[in-house]
Amino acid sequence: MDHLPLTSPAAAAASLSPSQDAGRVLDAYKTALATAASAAAYAVMARSMARELLPDELRAAARWCAAAARARFGRGEKERHTIVIRHQFDTGYSENQLFDAARAYLATRIDPRAMRRLCLARSRTKEPDGSGRWNTLLCMEPGGSTVDVFDGVEFSWACVETGGDDKKKGKGGGGNTRESLELSFDAEHTEAALERYVPFVMSTAEQLQLRDRALRIFMNEGRSWHGINHHHPATFDTLAMDPALKQSVVDDLDRFLKRRDYYRRIGKAWKRGYLLYGPPGTGKSSLVAAMANYLHFNLYDLDLSEVRLNSALQKLLIHMPNKSMLVIEDIDCCFDDAAASRKAVKAPEPVDHLDMDPDYTSDSSDENWAQPGVASLKPKGITLSGLLNFIDGLWSTCGEERIIVFTTNYKDRLDPALLRPGRMDMHVYMGYCGWEAFKTLARNYFLVDDHKMFPEIHELLSAVEVTPAEVSEMLLRSVDVDVALRILAEFLREKRRRTRKETEDKKNSAEDKEEVVAEKPV
Image (cartoon, rainbow, N blue to C red):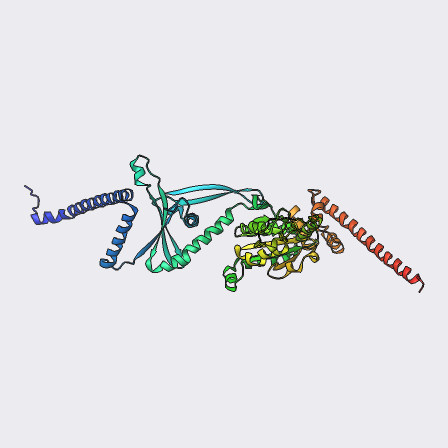
């Protein structure tokens, strides 16, 4: 009879111990995981209840006590500071502009792949050429958080939502929830956060707003501005002018935008003046539009004939916001018309009895002075000194980052007070159409950089004076490049013939005058 080999109990236990140990470890792991999940669920529920039931002040005190305890008994963790940026101020209904700026800034820093919940908003804006463009804005939902690094410092952002008034909740109103942003950082970086990071967030958001907003052009009526959307398509790329002059204007604008601290350091108002002069049709208005599109500044087209007093002019100008362009076209005609209108007013008759305050004083800049027994000898009106006082006087510091542009067809007619540096800092001559300007127009209209007729047109342009507006008119007469260039060449040849004839007539007239003078008896 065969017998199975006998094994000792110790050996049997040793053979079964690995599987039993693995089962006990797995059971312990499951138990620990369930306990951790339950603890996390309870923590989340407790946090939610605390947010709903505990006042903000009590929760802030609890956080302060916890931070103090960690600093006193903990493992030496760094103290953290938190800045709360509320959507609205508790003392009123005005909105906090820093909240909107921070939300716009964070939209450029959020990684959609790293956040489980996001708020998505889209808006449509019009481009200067009239086309539409969709803008997408990503926002954190309450409970979301993200991290931003600035100058090597880590800043944590969190979006939180607080309940409304407890009294309203008790009445069944439910209360109004308020959203706020919390900015957290190490306590040692408090100065960097307040002095550098928060201003950086504000300036970045401002630049984003300027980039996305639709440009507007404003006109004055009385003492107020009325604006409409501005869709002028002119850009520096499409502007028909000398390339070197064009680049110098662009460089000057770029230099101006970067000099905020420089202007403050030297004690000057942060503004820049440009005088655009040249014959009619040379592109002065197009250059103004190109500057506005390049800077993304709104245009304020000031019509001085609508302004009656210097005080009204001051009110208009001080109500212009920062980052805007003031334009006065044909400045040489403005004050001539005002002077002519004053001369046309008949002087009033003397008045025997006027009720006048003996201590009465008037604003001499408004020219509204009166003499005893005489009615106002001059009609009310604006003066050149009133305009200059805003451009370069005490009122020039009422705004920052402003561009002032004057245009004129006749620079020699302007008062020298307008031309000096500090008022019109850069004088830009908009001359007749040259070869480079023509090539820009040909590229704009027909997308060509070369053509068999270009040599002839080059020669004709060097012999005649023709404005870019005249060249554009000829190019618009046909959609076919060959036909349009033939029309332009014929126009230039005819203009050259007229120019030569006028020159010969003037020469013959001068010779006739010399002969008449020579024949006169002495």
